Amino acid sequence: MKLLTLNIWGGQVYEPLIEFIKSKRNEIDIFCFQEVLNGIKGEKSEVIVNAPNAVIDIYSQIKDILLEYNGYFVRTQYEEGLAIFIRKNISVTKNGDIFVYRYRDSMENKDVETIGRSIQYVEFKIINNQFAIVNFHGLWVNRGGKDDTPERIKQSRRIKKFLDNTNGTKILCGDFNLWPKTQSMAILEKEMKNLVKDYNIASTRSSLYSRFFDKNDRFADYILVSKDVKVLDFKVLPNEVSDHLPLFLEFN
Image (cartoon, rainbow, N blue to C red; front, side):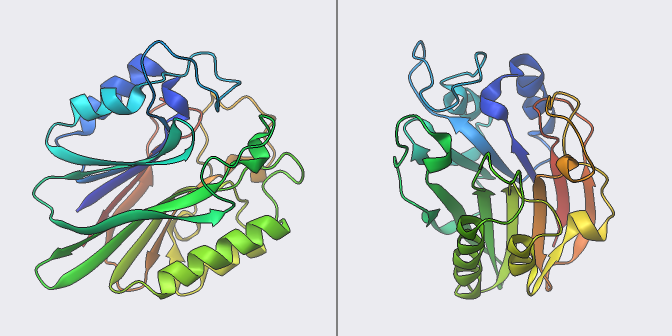
């Protein structure tokens, strides 16, 4: 099976993003997207406030492209949230989301640090194997960059608890908003393999990321897999369709 995860940045790099998704729809079995907007065309986003080119109905537009997939969208704040698209020939047995920081629509006074964060999941069986795919967009805070904070450590512990209580093969992916050598990452890595680390990935950010790069700033996105996942291929794709780069995983 093939999985792709990407923070789509609200669809700001619109045409390249749409063409990229079209080019991958015959190859990828599962798409996991973060920073997805599912609002009404013509309205302005109330969440991605510093993104003048954000596409308010990008989820609907992607859904129209991925006709051979079932789409699942979960909200975090107003029209913004997480989305998973999974091929219709894969029978999903369970799906939903669980908040790991605050709660839905929790933003206060347009302060993005108060936006709730959830993990989205789908579960399915192939032959006798149970799989759980978990899509995550981690807490963003201005203080401390992507380093540990008490909120992030609590967030990681809640995700770890969910994974521990989930049966079968597990894949956790998305934009974690964490540096590699943090306690928050170490919590998530327990009994999981960090493919970004294992494959010596140099960066998961595109040249469109405007913040000053230091060594740590090149990391935000990860795929972690349980030890029973057979990884056939893993790589960061070079396509510049967001300020993040797409991560690709082939597994069985």
